Amino acid sequence: MSISYSRISDTIEIKTLLTKGDHMITSLNFQKTNLTFGEENKICPNNKCSYEFEKTSFDNGFGAKNSKFLSGTLKIEDKANSINNSPVYKFYKISGLFNLVNRQENVTTGEKIVIYEGNLLLDTGNEMFSPSKLEYQSQIKLYESLNKLELIGTSN
Image (cartoon, rainbow, N blue to C red; front, side, top):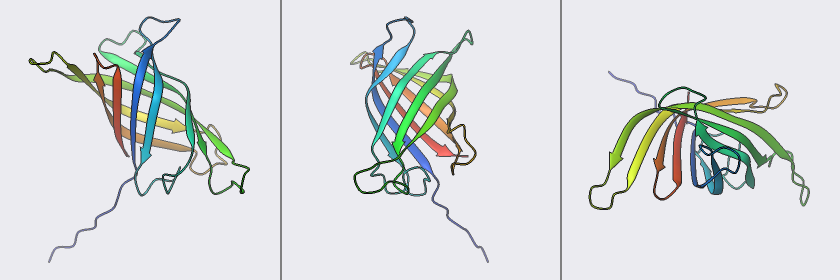
């Protein structure tokens, strides 16, 4: 006899267009971002929360060869504590070091896709909030000529 349990995991998906930073030539800043959480997430259970990425960028990994660092802030509506027309927001610091694992090139179109893997951490910095820290094992696809980033992650 075999028994198996299936657990829907907490997932995150971020799709964004990137613009070059003003101060650092290697910095790519988030613009026009879509955020989707999976069914079991604890940040926005119904995926109907308003959000904004503040000062979020994808940069060279501080001297680490073939790596990138994702950092910034996610401002997201806390539906559980919001009342009618008075939304409450939580702020999560976003960070993660992502290592280059693959590079693909479409020989017909010339499109280059660079693939990175690492852990994305969302942290309120305050243990009173639940959850205060979430970590997602993630893969990033960077579409170079389109200046587009796609992140898909699953909670650890």
